[in-house]
Image 1 (cartoon, rainbow, N blue to C red):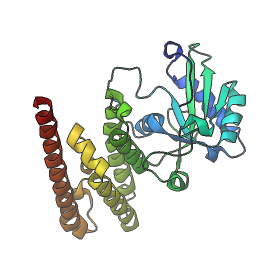
Image 2 (image 1 turned 180 degrees about the vertical axis):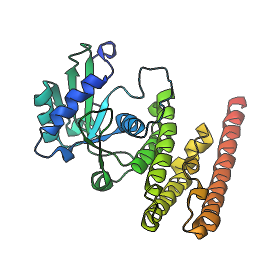
Image 3 (image 1 turned 90 degrees about the vertical axis):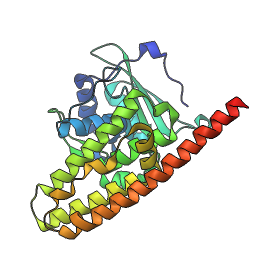
Image 4 (image 1 turned 45 degrees about the vertical axis):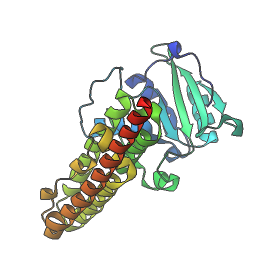
Length: 277
């Protein structure tokens, strides 16, 4: 990993700090190059949908700001906000393309901005193609990871990265489910057959996330249910989906969860027997 300053120097992004960053991004010839991902994307969607952010052990859901972007994008932003930039090399063995260290004009603490080449469990082309431009908290617009890719990313992080299994990481996954729920309702609010078809596509994708290894892991370990993001009763134009298809999706999901629970129990018993040997 790329080396960073001592932890006691790190601060947390304030609204004022983030506004400085977003203002600088807007001055780039192609602001869409900067796609906000990670915990800050969860915070962005939570603000957009007016979702209450749960209380954790820290001042916010995330400490740094993550973008999918190139080394050149990182260098542009570093110059614009007067940050130092460290470019990743092959020897760093990191998903970062660059890391910016920036001293907050407000707090004087060092803030970190990571530029990533991609996200675990999410196709990079999908990140770029599906990014959504939004505005939240009266700040400049920003392109942000699609709500359903946020859900995938948070679940995959918990499954694959032990260091993400913190109170904050678990809270991010819970908020991601709520974001997915709001996204589906947002689609349905257009009140048209075409909009409901799009909502059905979203619901089916949510079900596939719930049935994935990451979905089974997150439900089995933390009781976070991606399926709860969809209320089939809200789908009124296509009763075959609400009455039949979703019930089948739920059945498949429950079967997978039962298999995961059985495997988990067998693993725990095996470890217990080894410790007694």
